[in-house]
Amino acid sequence: MNKKITASLALIVVLAVVLLVLTREKGADLPPLESWSGETQEILLKKSGETIRIFRSDGTWLIGEAAYPADAQAVAGLEEKMKNLVLSDLISSREHYERYELGDDRALEVSLRSGGKLVRHIFIGKKSSTFRHTYVRLAGRPGVYLAEGALSDEFGKPLDELRSREIFSETKSSIDSIEIRYGASNITLVRRDVPEAPSSGKKDEATKEDRWECVSCAAPVDANRIGQIAGSFAPFTAAAFPAIDKKVLGAPRCTVRIKTAGKRIELAFYSKIGDNRYLCTSTGSPYVFAVDAWKAERYFVTAKDLKEKK
Image 1 (spheres, rainbow, N blue to C red):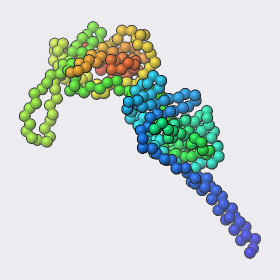
Image 2 (cartoon, helix red, strand yellow; image 1 turned 135 degrees about the horizontal axis):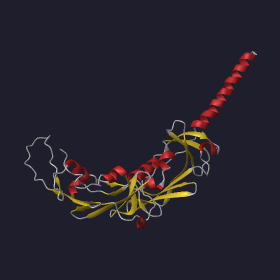
Image 3 (cartoon, rainbow, N blue to C red; image 1 turned 135 degrees about the vertical axis):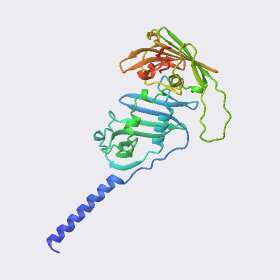
Image 4 (cartoon, helix red, strand yellow; image 1 turned 90 degrees about the vertical axis):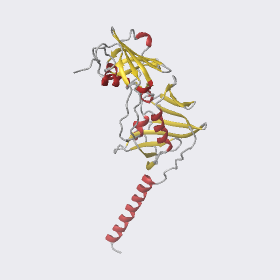
């Protein structure tokens, strides 16, 4: 066998060994990740010395030491991601954590408990270059893995973004009247029942809505605008929850009182804050919250503003 053939065979062997090592490094030894069927009781998110605790109480998700109502849909999404976590590659069997933002000072630690036991415990690092995968490591196991999904975005949200934004919810048909006090103006919008017309049996027959009137308006009013106000509470949501004490809010700029068959709900709008929002309180929530300016200002109306345009 001449030297050229020998060298070629040696090169093939070396390449085969390198390929075997790379294949084993990248795709082998992916640990099984078992899901769980029981109810998840707690989700802990830890990063840079801060901890967000999301926990279930009487079937409701709460968040933080103050036990704020959590966004149930958002929390269900986090739970589902961890239950169905998929590892697609072993990136490194060694502890090369810093380059993947998986060191103790950069990683986001996520742990879930169900049935009193720890059922998932991982560390989330940076996203891959495709932004469709995330580098992770598993608690108690060395190595870096690639997991499906942009986990750092989904689990890295601040507490405020995981809180429920719904303050209350009342449909237009459930409301009897709406009183709006804005400056020196005081108007009352009342829902009048419209008798149901006999059905003709046609599928495309339009459904008649109840009629809304302004009992304190002398002139004919814009029915569409009143209908938009009456239909704006299903649901009524906050944009943010600023850390402000109710005692410093002062007198409200506008007050809205909603009357239903069994409830009385009050909304109060205060001063405008820097991010083009108004501070707000409601009997539907114990917290000060903020709403976007366009949402608040639709209630800043007088009888003149509701006058029918010809």
